[in-house]
Figure 1: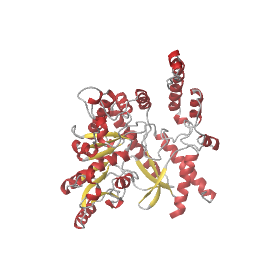
Figure 2 (figure 1 turned 180 degrees about the vertical axis):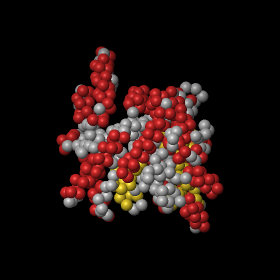
Figure 3 (figure 1 turned 90 degrees about the vertical axis):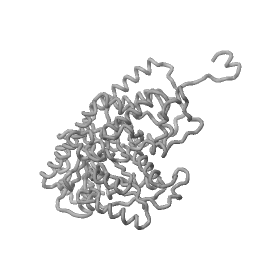
Figure 4 (figure 1 turned 120 degrees about the horizontal axis):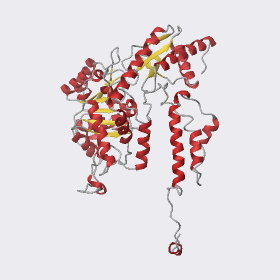
Length: 495
């Protein structure tokens, strides 16, 4: 502190920057080395393991009030967070529908954090890159260049964006000004009985309520029944409702079933409905050369939700909402207070990206997507999607060849449902398969999930993983059968 500051009674000014930049640089190199080793050796570690009590207790420690050396802080992170992950980057993680990240994307996240831009908008490079990644998503799905879009946290928010635009366009009033209570006829949205739970949350958040979302029965392949949908629309109109939107599945979360998107697009056009596609599971199949035909019709949607953190393997989190009518998209969200007005030049002369969603402050999600696409090219990501779909077909073949395993149905894309079947039924069969699933997790062998298909309980493998190999699937079947025999021989299933 200089004499003038001291005479005024001012304290020394502080910063979060280090006093020793060279020391920080050297230590950061060690962290990067450890990160490379972490990914290189991921296959050698358990997929998942339970945390011991002493590790859990560390997360109940009180608020730190005094400083600690960065090496000590990093050491604690290494022993806790890095040692007990969810496991979704592991080649044998197939529990839920998640991507497995990539190192270049992680570097992108790091650089985005270092650069520190707020992507609410403005005239700066990160804002232009955000728009470029949205444009690339439009190209991948065959959307017109005139469409708009926004990067969001993930699929749930991407679906909410699309459905909010649908509500406002079809309400017949200015919903933003007057609210949903002023809508003359209650709106109806339609989706199959297999749609993701985020759509219920969307209906509730939009003030329409769960009952505004009519679930339509599915056929034997768990795709929406088009005839039943038509009948429901006629019935609702006669009852005084206003059919507003149909939600198509480009891959259901349970089984990967893909609705007939062309038929839905045609029906929506004929009936004057908004056509939204939940493509968080399978929209990006559009870039896969051997399987793109499965999502034909997605390019006709009014809005689409997709997830780069799934089959583009971007580090969490990044989703994308695309809307064909750019003006309707902006009208749904744009607000311009005096402190966010545009200027003809300077920092505020760029586009305000917050005008296309709910967040004013937005993270720089685009860089991790951009860097990985530039490094590998979109064609490689398409081949990796084909690879995962082929791997599920391979696994289905192993299941069919094993007498003690039962397949729920032939897989559509990259999800397969099956179970161990020693001649049991009902709750006993469910308990046995649940125990197999839990022991696979606890022994660090593989991470599966379970679900209900056609009223029955099944194990579920969802392969959205660029690290998975056929050898991993061979191991899964061997270990699953071993555990099934072992548990059955014990004569009981532990709770």
